[in-house]
Image 1 (tube, helix red, strand yellow):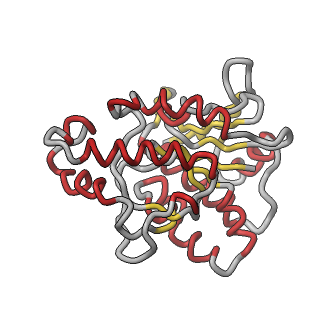
Image 2: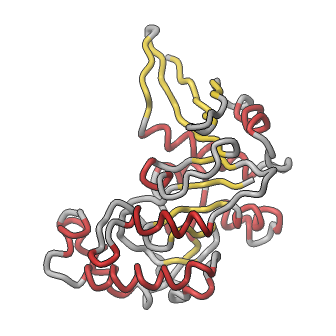
Length: 258
């Protein structure tokens, strides 16, 4: 089983750790492509109009300046570098700490794939710096990064024929590699109040992270099928399951009632 995560907009800079070594990241077939994006990002981040080009406000000027030295600053495992609601709900810091002494968990974190505008994808323990770059960004000569990474990840990403993936990504990151519809299970949330249903966006991140963390920290083997994922989810939530079609993957929908 694989767990597919989005990156967070915000990152937590590490005060200690090795500098970036692209050759040591997982998916070495992406190394040359990552170098191109890193080089382009550094150039754009040095421009006077860097904030505009990267689509960020003045409050993030320090983050953009950090982009210019990404190969010099300390790195940390991806699950510690990414931050925000999903990663907090996942208990990412505790998982990384436990993985140092738990080989089974360490192997599981290698099957947690974070899709990244800078790196294409990394696994949970790949050591990366805190960068600022969104998948929808246009980096000039490379064009829009969704278009840049899509054909590359189509060749790099795969699932074994009997494997299932829990997809917790947002649409921008899902679009670069949606995966096979009959093997991917997306996850969302709706609230129900007075008989009215409303799609939950922000808190859906929380439940995606929480469920991913529960799966990873469970002593039982990870589910191997969509049905297995559904059974595990039903231990914690009220869930509606939609089977896959030719055009859409399966979906686990958490139902939140007043």
